[in-house]
Amino acid sequence: MSEMSQSQVTWTLTIDELSGVPGELKRAVLNEVGEYLVTSVLDYVAESRSPVSGGKFKAKLSDDYAKREGKDTANLDLTGSMLDSLTYRIRGNSVEIGVFDSDEAPKAYNHNVGDTLPQRQFIPMEDQKFKSEIMAGIDEVIEEILSGGV
Image (cartoon, rainbow, N blue to C red; front, side, top):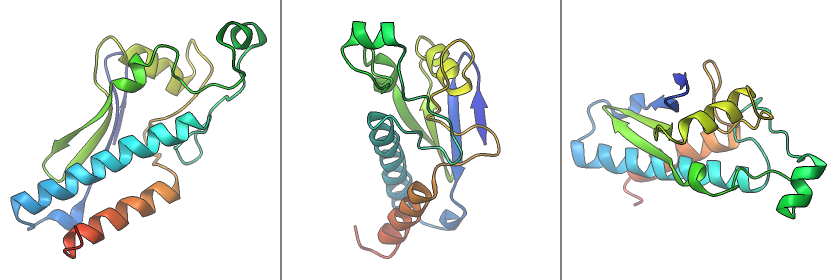
């Protein structure tokens, strides 16, 4: 499930395997998955790539902008404030990742949908998910914690 609006840009992952898991263990899984997702998104964006399966990320900056910034590829880190606001919330058996800050959400929205800025998608839209590498990593995090590995 996804919400793309000027007030928040989020994607929610429900982890069905957590039904019946004790509260403390469930919270550990959800926190680790949330941290993993935030780190994965930031890693992809730092490399000017979309972490979204089928997502678009216009990596090349305009010549004027590139000259002004002293770089030629986008990493969504003009001031750092939008990416610094990327976080997650836990709700039931779900992790919701996104930009919830009302000052930063319009920037995140415009980048994700390509509305007033070049499209550089870093949060999945409805009917999308993260790249298979990230989704597989989520499964590994869940399995490791539930099997007692952490």
